[in-house]
Image (cartoon, rainbow, N blue to C red; front, side, top):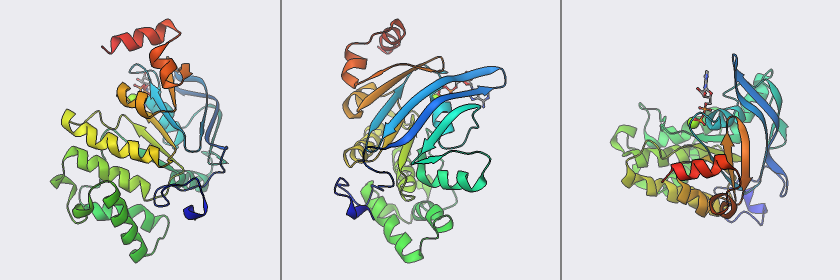
Amino acid sequence: SASADPSATNAVLVAPHTEIGAPVVRITALRKSFGELEVLKGIDLDVMRGEVVAVIGKSGSGKSTLLRCINGLEVFQQGSLVVDGKPLLHESALAMRELRQRVGMIFQSFNLFPHLSVGRNVMLAPRLVKKRKAEENEARARQLLERVGLAEKFDAMPDQLSGGQQQRVAIARALAMDPAVMLCDEITSALDPELVGEVLRVVESLAEEGMTLLMVTHEMGFARKVADRVIFMHQGRVHESGTPEAIFGAPQTPELKQFLSSLH
Ligand code: ADP
Ligand code: MG
């Protein structure tokens, strides 16, 4: 259990599937095409346990496709992808199911099940996939909703919530599966500006508590503050990577310099 791990500061959230020092995600020479269009042109990327990696880059550079490959939503043509010590094999339905249990993903659109209450949204996958007992499942769902500041919304329906609240439910729902890594794809892009902060604060707290995070974000201030490492993608490649200080403070390539100046 999580409590056995001294590095897990919050046993509620951190599922230490992977050994300390081992990559939770290991991507090697990954190539992905849609027909003739090669979108990922050989990606190498390791995400270590507890690491927060921000992915930045222009629209169309392949950021979402990379995340979608990692949780098995896209089939890739070449290279290898190992998540939590297990290779991703599209040929095996069982392996794919196991993969989806180890990878949490949060999207720009919150994707809550509209006909299910907030509590049921959080409880559904653990009940169906993990066969978690009803009582334990509900207790955990309540705990996670409290964690994202929505304890009182257990019985509310998604359409009664603000966008920021719905996104926080989506985070609680992803956490309910005890993912080894959480993938976030521009999770604040669809929110009204005044709701962005509440979602980022939850993500920041996850980062502080040791969750492994790979997040595509337009929030450069947030990336700078929270990320251990920043990856700049350009035309399907990791064009530049480094600490936030290096990437934002001393960009090396003309492409990154241009991207950063285009943001102002
Ligand atoms: P980003 O998230 O960085 O904006 P994407 O990964 O969404 O980039 O897209 C990268 C490229 O792949 C774009 O040229 C996009 O049009 C193309 N692409 C993405 N998904 C598909 C798809 N399902 N079919 C065909 N082309 C796609
Ligand atoms: Mg995208």
